[in-house]
Image 1 (cartoon, one colour):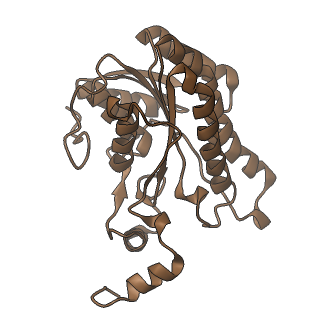
Image 2 (cartoon, rainbow, N blue to C red; image 1 turned 180 degrees about the vertical axis):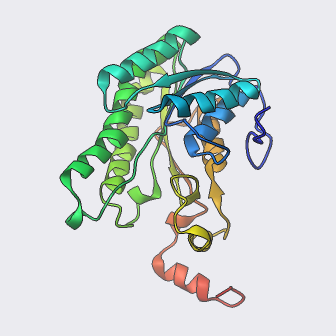
Length: 281
């Protein structure tokens, strides 16, 4: 066994996706501290799917693949630079050929590196958009024909609260805003083919990408949401599982925040909540 409790807070094993094939981008890992892509890949596999684990790093993709196999699941490891149209199409085609079909696509891969617009370097701006937005588009473009052949399917794009609220993230927030718009447009275009397209909007998570500021940063993330708790990669993975599963068969063009209410609160509301009676300083 992998030693990782698949599902995190609850047991993730089941048969919701038995016989299905899923692609998860940015799903590589290096240890037991999982990002959203690796957690999603593990959870979909634990629910019966054959999972294509796509990453820019062969070693990271193979590590997640080994975790899936150790848990009794089935994985196909894939390597591609998401900014490379030929490489993306080759990876998607390889998964569909080896697994025999494609039913689910999770566009999770992203890079940060954003700076406020006034200090941003154009090459950094372009690189963030190339991975986060162009990469999402290229994967959807390459996957669409395979999803149609499978009789429909589901695409889930992963955005960020940075697309909806200001953090000084520059290109990162802007690129994720483009992912939100792309989701709606794809849902419109692909709906007649029975392909559902939805978007998950994670909040401030305790993940390898979001782990900044040490214990002080973790405490700030807890205090910045309505539940006063810390989210992790499994919270996103469970939301993705719902959206790609049969329970969500009539849901498309939806944006699902996974943020403990962060984006529902105004700045004044947060100040009042934190200063209210019975609250910790």
